[in-house]
Image (tube, rainbow, N blue to C red; front, side):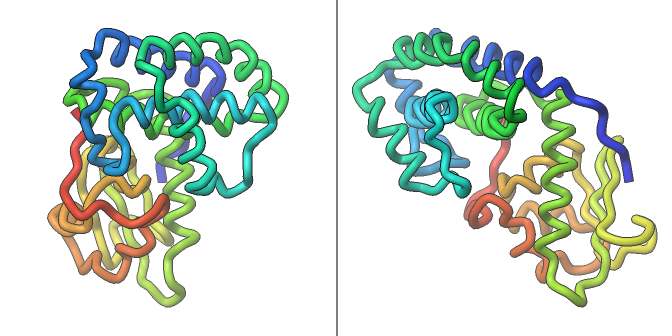
Length: 229
């Protein structure tokens, strides 16, 4: 199993925020209304509203343990009349307070920006930010979530990327099920951002079917194939 690199979570959050701001700053109103395939109830502007709203709520001390749908929906609704420029401006205002919060409480917000940056890129067909320390850290974190969700009695499953290998138990070479894809696609699959059909196509040994529920770490797997960029 590949080890994860040490990550400066606050610096990585800052870099991701800067990449997202660069991605959305010059969007037309039409493009900001693009549906996000990974979050099909939201447009690009809605998803940005959530990303900004999450930071604002964290700084304000309004953060439920489960990050439930009502909480995230309220972030979007509260900013319903704001355009992208106004959202970017608000995000800029809360950046320093949020960094100070993370220095004291930990870098949970890094996961949100890392995941949703790629959701936005998928909607806008603008690849980038795929090989970052934050993405590698999230891949390791979500591999742990997959392992915790596996039903008792399932044989080991191995995920084999270009430079990253993970197995739920034992050696990858001995796993009953083997899934091969790029490091990035495996990371996104662990975040429930790849379809069951994609996972089946990437399976080079065994049957991934009994394992699919465990990949639904952030809700149901998408019903259509997803790419990011």
